[in-house]
Amino acid sequence: MQTTLTIDCGGGGIKAAVLDAGGTMRSQPIRVPTPYPLSTELFLQTLKQLADQLPKADRATVGIPGMIRHGVVISTPHYVTKTGPRSLVLPELVEQWSGFDAQTQLSERLGIPTLVLNDAEIHGAGVVAGSGLEVVLTLGTGLGYALFDGGKLAPHLELSQAPVRFQQTYDTYVGETERKRLGDLFWSRRVRKLIDGLRPVFVWDRLYLGGGNARMIKSEIVEKLGDDVVIVPNSAALVGGVRAWQVVDQTN
Image (cartoon, rainbow, N blue to C red; front, side, top):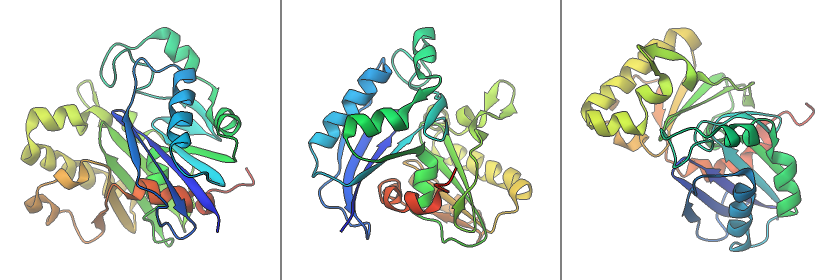
């Protein structure tokens, strides 16, 4: 039975697990803090070290925050900083990461076919039903986004970088820093406002809220989100690594 090494790369931590074709984990997932400053070489080394601690897999799926096109990093918000999210951006890291062919480099380093996508896209692959227009928003360090039409992944847009108010983007408006500053209740109200604002833009059939902070939305706000909104577990980011190969058009 084919196995998949799934690696979920976040701003604060990197998680990995090996799953079989049915999405069952072959071992306990492992996690390490995301090291900073994170050069592309250190990134490759970190993922290889994680893979070496897990059972050998037939293929790998890796999710990276930012704009990823055909496995190439166009931009990434966290990995170009000195000490992590919201810290000083280092020009030399911006240069390293811009145009970094993560898919090719990881395939060579891991020694197995590797699919590299935006991390929210992999999270979404683990939860979408496969019918209608389905949107995935992940709440964590920032805001992740993915769009699926009829179960197929649509081209990625960096929705998180769209301006919301004053100097804030969606990424900062509902990100972890603001959650801590506002407290869960006021932050939850922001999340609801975000959803209400996006609903007429996408006219989705279903919206999935995932990521580590989705569970922080207060219950009284969850009840007001609407029947078209579903909160999903963060573990979907690993399960999605198996399904991601089916939702992506491999001909492009």
